[in-house]
Length: 251
Image (tube, rainbow, N blue to C red; front, side, top):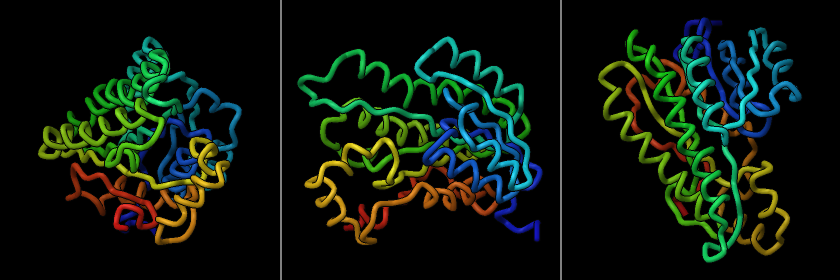
């Protein structure tokens, strides 16, 4: 059955970092809700997400891009803007772990470029046709560290805090123009980014002890929130950072 508030039939969604983890789960969820998918990642052509999207009955276009390469991001922004998508999900990201006193400058620079600067560049350009036609959905992927400081990840925390602020800043300017800008803040999800934490028995135990749901999140736990924020069901939701964290922040 189509036509409900969560139906994305006839819409095109760009999902960055779509080859695995949260990005792949979001791409699949949007496709199952009816959207055609443009997936962007450094390894998009080596992943199986295209087949998953097509098995859901939707079209898939894969684009390879390194979000740490500013020149490539500029070119990608123009390419994506030309596609005139209805939905942009800024999921691509990276993480570098080292104590703040020893954190390498090049690691800081790369994390800020991938996790914040490239997100702004893409959104600014891809949203231009959305603003012209008066409709569109932009979804950033924030983090629990948009609210907290974390340990040994100063660049990641700074970038994700920036994403929360950018979400609100763009929403303030674009909500009245028909473009909704929101973010999802995943909790502790079992992906490559959290493997170091899950492999540390003490950290893993202390994290699980604080999660009321009693488990690590799964990538597909994020899909429903993405469908909501991409659909007409969220037309009056703007500038929010939605935690999907098993209750972590409420503890």
